[in-house]
Length: 296
Image (tube, rainbow, N blue to C red):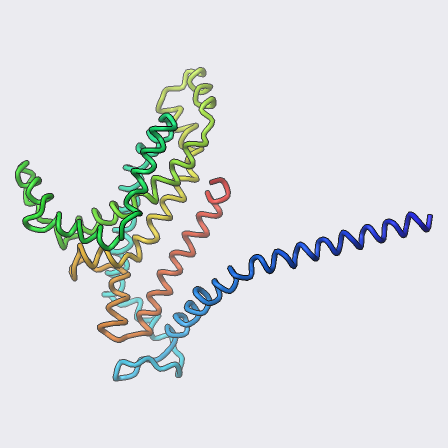
């Protein structure tokens, strides 16, 4: 009996040591990621949050004393709210357009033969091989008064094709830039659908639209949620595309934040706006993990 107890105690001790060794090993494996997050995320984030409560001197310097919430009170000003609502509206519209364009494309890609599917996926990812700034400047050339897009629209008799530095130009650039972020999650979700469920629905005399609405759409909804967040969040805080294609007339939240830091020299207000954009990102991330992230 004593021998059995001794064996059990020794085996439990060995198991405990093995668990501790695995935990120690996991800590050292994850240590570089922890250090990376601390240096490049936690410290800059804390710095921005501290700046948002700082004081702006008369000379435009940000003084880290006399902490206050004046910058957050200024978020209620008409100018700030106009920029925020414009950013929200353009981000929502960009997301909807990307979804309408990406869903049929992702559906088509997922139902092709492997060779065709791989070629189409490569075509979707080719834009990532070049610099985003260069691609946006290319659209500026195409949308200029003597650009190819303008000439085609005018020759077809569709009206004035000069849309550079307007809201449609900004939306066009955002859709072009973020469309792959909608296509790829949708493809990943649709490609894993069990099509025997659709066949079963059709055997039960469901129409094509009803089979899509009751079977395909619910199963692809995680991809819809993930893609929508991946498009909406960067569109809301976009800077490059509105600055190049929208000019000063269609500045969004990202452009307005840069203006506060560079031109107005109002660090606290720019930091509070950055915290606002970060809050939108965190809310989107939480929705993603609660609704679709676990199933994608």
